Length: 486
Image 1 (cartoon, rainbow, N blue to C red):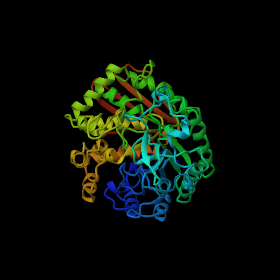
Image 2 (image 1 turned 120 degrees about the horizontal axis):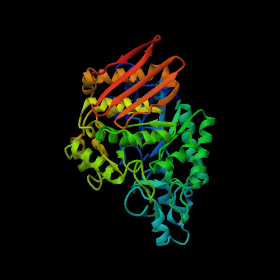
Image 3 (image 1 turned 90 degrees about the horizontal axis):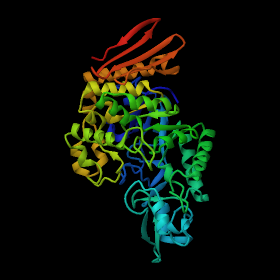
Image 4 (image 1 turned 90 degrees about the vertical axis):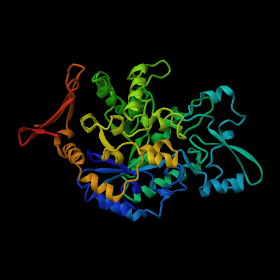
């Protein structure tokens, strides 16, 4: 994987109708900006109830946007990350429909995870209380089979997302088939979506238990033999994240987005610096993704202190809502059919009050901290909350999932804002210092000074938070140069 900025995008929301058009965009208007692209679920169908994260067929690209040959064209010049949805399949899948029709006689019987496979005698109230839930309610949905038998099927997320038994032979075959297809298409990294919930064991939280680590290690070993790296997507307490990072290829730095907001809102880098002293280095950094801005990653948990004190964290959330003039409240918590209670749904640009200066400071911090940075397609153009789409779908996360037109893309690529952002991305991609050694200079809490050095090359970021001024300096042919964004 190249140590360059990566793009996170849906195929059909970036002014493109298909993968071929996305490929063309990467080689024209966006040329040189991205060493890799995380293409969000492109499987059949891309427009399911969870925007592709409920695949009917995980080994087939939705024919409306292309095929595996089209994806291979992209992988010829750009690293591709693809989602491997290990926890569940669609209720409309051939496998689950066959299970409903034939029950135990179905060849997919072992693939479908039911309550009685984990709790043969039924779960106790104590066992149910232990199960870690990302969303309210029990993790089961009752289905009636064709013979009238009723079964409680594991549905960790929604009734349309049917959990699979990843430890069964059918489960292993299912996941192995996905890896083989990815390998053939030139996918260089897989993101294990919702993998923390994949292993269920009676009497445990059923989330990131010891057996989950064994499962991740098994997939990682198979993937590496195929030349594919593995990124694990886990939202959890920061100390848990540090431990997870020791045992996998890559994790997300999900603490960073809120810590950067804390730094800029409160003009104090203390919490960010504390994190950078202990943060894992094998990370993919983000400020925004297709999901909301995660809160649990910096919060306290079970008596363990978080990276930000809970009261201060509450004020940061309130500040986000204030900066968005309340629009983010309409997409967060129990609003707008939203079930991700630990996230704030809002574009990062909107969270910063639509301040281009603050936003570019935030991106500069992201690009200078350790890790491979990713930029979400909405954040690429610095746009606000899409209230029209939210009102149309009543899905909270759609506030940050805008459908750009070709004309919008053309206009934004030509904007002054994008020209500034482009310069910042090109510096991060092209300067050799970022392949070297990271240093965080000792400075007062109201300043942040980050530096990279590689032999005689260097690049440094200095931010005076009291004055809200930023300076980026770097070596150029043995002399000092400066990147001026305004």
